[in-house]
Image (cartoon, rainbow, N blue to C red; front, side, top):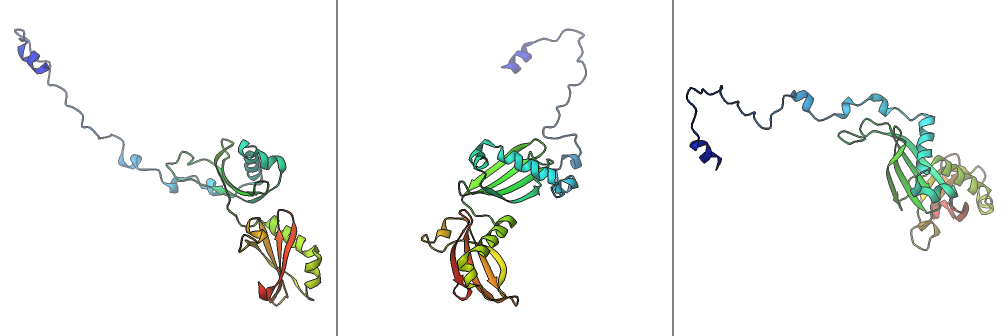
Length: 220
């Protein structure tokens, strides 16, 4: 339609075209250097993001986590254990790349669930939160608590042999649904002699803080 109109128009006498028409710019090209256009690389990240968390940062991460409304029951009852608090670095082009982040893993005894959270320390918010029925590894506090509970149990004390002492503490799941440890967070404390030969295993229910089973090591 427009081409028909232009063909029907007469050019005035003496009128000269005003220069050549401008060339159309190629589509898809950019004047940004190729080096500047490349995707961000984690190698260019601030090395300080990989540094261990300071005690203040760890405390801030935990405070931010327990103040989250989704964990109100855990914070109110106070029955939880922090498994680990460690720095977390996100690769670009994620929006949190370049932020000082902390990963907090905890176990909520009040709801029998695992808590895995990413805390943005720069913004002071919980950037990501996962709640599941998984069983994270035992914390150092849980291991120490399991040993102390087993050591004062009368059944354990009467079956320990001379020279027996705690050798190791492991996270334990029951083998069948009938086993109390099948559904409750538990630990197995292995006792033995200094030569490393195990003699006794005590299963500790970390929720009620009681020994639920005492088994000779050869039957474990």
